[in-house]
Length: 437
Image 1: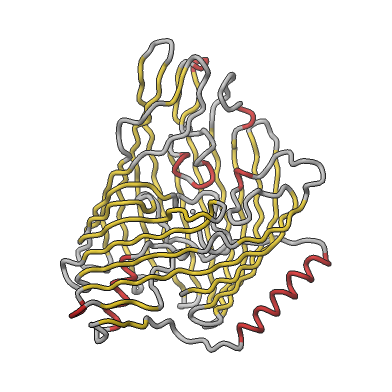
Image 2: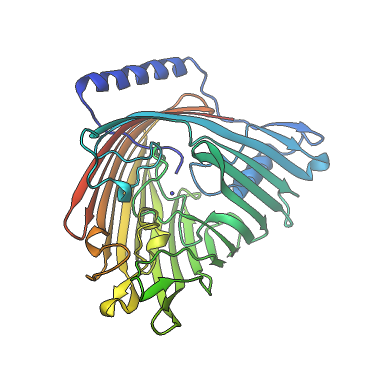
């Protein structure tokens, strides 16, 4: 799942270094003038209504705080027939892990916490700019009933090589391409430095198509459904079962009700999956049904305080959740390894965000995810080594120096427990600096 991330504590001398660096950066940023972000236009349609321009570009962008979908500069076509914006941000992250350090400096993935790190590797210094991203936001006939949108973005998480993040087309209520699963609610969460976010989040990008019906555009009610390319990850038994190509798409449906000018909402979603595998001795394919249900939303209190929440439950949906997408827990062996059955799981998170002032924001997040795989032997992933449950906690403070510059301090703690009782934890203390354009 994310574009801002998290940090932990460390010995006193290293803590002083982090805090000294943070203070210097904040002091430098404070000299800048804080002003609301404005989109500068050029071309033949500079007189386009600024609200229409902003809404068109914002509506066409993904619903995620990690994606700066509205650029600082946009080209406006003749008679405002199209808008073309190219933007993004440069984001640097510096910090320390201590405990059982996670390999990635950008994604605090609790399922990737090493259970037995090499001797002497109990801490690690992190420095990265891989979360930086660039996007192209293109809207034809903005503000009309025939508005068409195209959006493409990339980040550099793959060893600083451009990696596709989103790519889709929109027309009326139809969207086709590569975006977060329609089962998920990516706008439900507090900003963070950690790109991954809560361990139980369902904000995974997939290829698919969905249709949304809104009685009034940008109104209170939304209903929708879609089809998506399935992602699967099984534990199989050599010589008995194996994974095969999937025959059927995943089918998500969702409904949402919003109030308080969109600052508060509740969203209910469900997904149906057909998981296909092969029984090798019988030379026959079998299907198992997977399904999931999610409740998510936000409640804004007194304008300054917002509660974000999400709860998810299901069977055969592990590959749709950030923490277990690669943990072989969609299907696991039963009947002596001759059969595979969907694994039940549940998870959830809650986050509180407090807008201290126009420039400062603070938030805390707690998340947990649990799986229930029945004991087996002889699997491609040993039962005892599988992910049983994890916890994720983060706390941060953001300083919005200007409409282009953000600085954040964050602490993240996570713990993973396996079915054999083995457990490991990691802390991350980090600072992020993001300059948007």
